[in-house]
Amino acid sequence: MSTLLAPRRNRRSAADARRAVLASRRRFWEPGDLALSPSTAHHLLGELENRGELRRVRRGLYWRGTKTPLGMATPPTDRLIEALAPGPGVGPAGQSAANLLHLSTQVARRALVAVPGRAPSDAGSVAFVSRAARTGRTAAGLNAVEVALLEVLDDWHTLLEVPPGDAAKQLSELLRSGNLRAERLAQAAATEPGRSRARLAALLTMAGRSDLAAGIPPPDPRTRRAALASLEAA
Image (cartoon, rainbow, N blue to C red; front, side, top):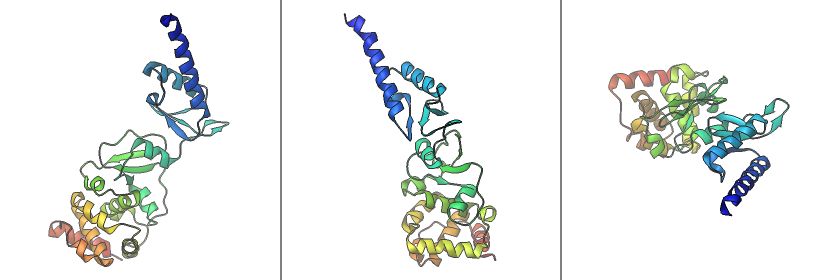
């Protein structure tokens, strides 16, 4: 008797899972989210993708958003980043970082995101870059804006559209106001490149936090001189 009932239970479970997916909005789905065997869950999600009810982000990850005449809309960039690289210490890199800090008006074709570990595979509108050695970002619990600051300090010459002196004043004001958490950044600094450490220490001093600047490990003198010269250049 139980053998005869098993297929019926499986069909009911699959039907319940299908209804749950179709009733959802603005969320990701993975096979593990469904109370089905892995093979059945993969099959169901793939079938719904083929029907245009889901958008495949990558293997095993689907998005249920807004349906358009061209199919399921792509997930918002922030939701995609949260799904693929959750946790602290994650934030924009490159032009995405400079744009977030209002130091550049350029918008990258794909958002570039720095991850304090192994970088996930690129997906949709997001590309990832690994910062596996910069473990202080995770330990200090940095948010996306604070990660953006460290990324800009590391690639200062390339990313700025405003004069370096103006950029330094703008960033030091963010530190002074608390919009960037000076204590967290100082904590994270030890695992950053030498040029970034020198520039962060200078910004903290400008912001009236020389106490925190003094605790940042200094780079070699040559690196420090070059980093500070670029920070103050007109």
